[in-house]
Image 1 (cartoon, rainbow, N blue to C red):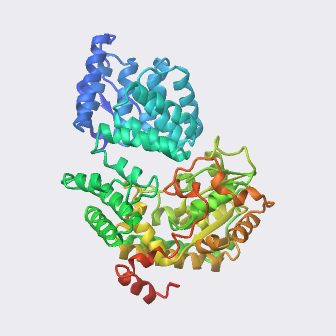
Image 2: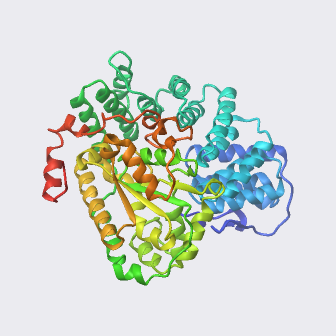
Image 3: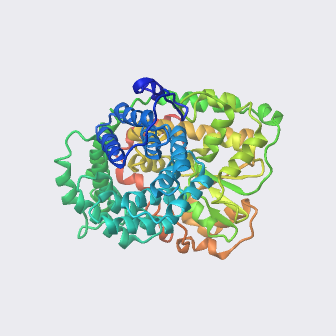
Length: 557
């Protein structure tokens, strides 16, 4: 049900545009008791996912007192729960115009703005919230989440610590603290925070996954017994089972029990896959549309975009060395790590004017060919501020930007693009083993090993297409070659980006910058070879995948 279908009391109605139409009448000011009662009603409805009831309570209050800041704020919270972040920001901004002294208003405005990728405004809202010195831990936690999204992990840790100190048995606060500590490489402290979260709530299953991946487990030191015990009680919680089985797979793999590891991976992924409305044919049509749109003639006839050498895009299938390559580059004094940005895809979506409810589909691709590419390039660059702009270059390491290489070339013709490649079997296995964001549909192929293989084939052929129509544009780097000859490959990467060589690029493990990706632990270590040909541990289980890849003429060895 859409927000616009919720009718208000006495003619009050939320029209879905960030404003309310309230029937004129006698207006009185709500008392403190009224406001406390309103908060209780909204919390009651939200706890039961009765969003219509929560919205109705806010509208009733606004019918009585149109200038009540708390009613506008709570209506913003309800809108955010509905995923209507534009509307939510507008309601909370209205609350702030009525009363700008409430830290939680600014904190939740910052959250909405951050989710809308309006990072400069989000940063301003965070600064205001912190200046008001919020006393309650929930507001502090909200501020920390926004700081983390903005890449300010030092500040995030500070406010997460304050939230956890005020409420040490809140597992969510401890989990968020642990995650930020992990991003900055403080693994012992992160482990303590994760264990505190588990002690408070053993059934916050995602914490177990984070803990399992925090270090290499050993036969003497692991969490296998605890995980196996929890698995017996997980019941119908599909995502809970997914987290636990991936944790067990990681720990069994670390301790040499590869058959058990693959059994848990397969069981967890299979159950999750049954809940998804995913069809590999949707992705096939998407890839085919990209190839059809970006012919040599189409590229040649397009007007060039925004001239800047700032961005360096690092793309490729996930788990193929993209983070390693980013760390090599961002160890250079002229390069800043901006992380995995969704900014380019969102900038294209807005510019295209497509009305579909997904960021990338064939409608958006086709309409994207009609945009002003100079404006697209500039809007992308502007959207990365204030994080970027203080060094000559920054890296954008969202792997799936390989789908946007044509648009990137047209919008940012001077940008450098690097694509990571890895042995197909290792690529597919690593994707199947990785527990990605369960709310990010781009990863839905990874819950089935054969679908992962078919997705890899689509990726491989698209990269061949880019090499044909944009010769020399994309530097392809083989992960195995970086491992075998770090110095030569690092120099090749740095040279491609037009940079002078710096020896620091060979010591990427000393790079103190935060790493908010699945490789945040591994890239704190020197290059190791144990991930090369990992697929051989699972050779029997992967034989059907190998047969399929060979039938598609994929280079296996």
